[in-house]
Length: 270
Image 1 (spheres, helix red, strand yellow):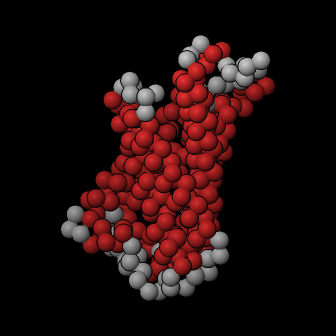
Image 2 (cartoon, rainbow, N blue to C red):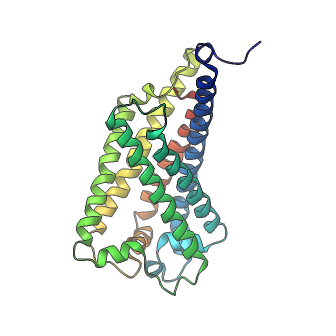
Image 3 (cartoon, helix red, strand yellow):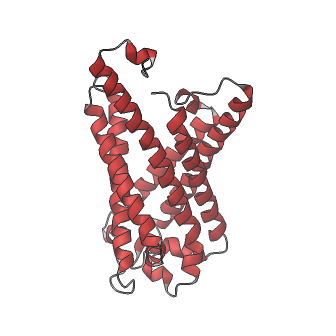
């Protein structure tokens, strides 16, 4: 008795093994990405408390303050390692035999996501490393260095617009239920409706989270930057009256998408 699916049985043995390996790696990637989204959401939710109990947080930076607290650096290191591995996998995907015949646009999207994951992983690693040092020493950051350039505000504004564009994409995909193309929806009515609701909540939730982050980044691009740059302005947001609520929405949006992405490890069409 064979454990292969009918689709795999119709292929040569080497192709079947390659397909099974691809499925295992892809589903593992979805699960890992889901966990990382949840961890990012936890970090965002912890920012208001960490900033509130840290004197001079605006001159240090919100994320660096979180990383300096017990457990904070561990979270950033886990996120760093996870996204570096995911980024490397996404960059390798377009050159694998399975994807060589895909449209150039799809392969370009994979490469773009891979680069974004790598940058997120490297940024998380730098924050984790900075959190171990004295935050009062060298509070500078990459964003503050960018903001010191003549075109710094323009670069940050372009980055903000990219975030808002991605947010719009997630909102449309969630509202129009475009995510149904990516997953196998249970045939039973008892499981179908919860899956549709979870998918819509996950995509719209992440869209709102990215929309808030994009709007904040766009506004911050044209505000005077302190020594901690954008991270310092994020600390200032956390201390503002509406800041904790906005950050809570961002955190919960990331967490909701994280749970959906983890569930997609089992439901994904591969």
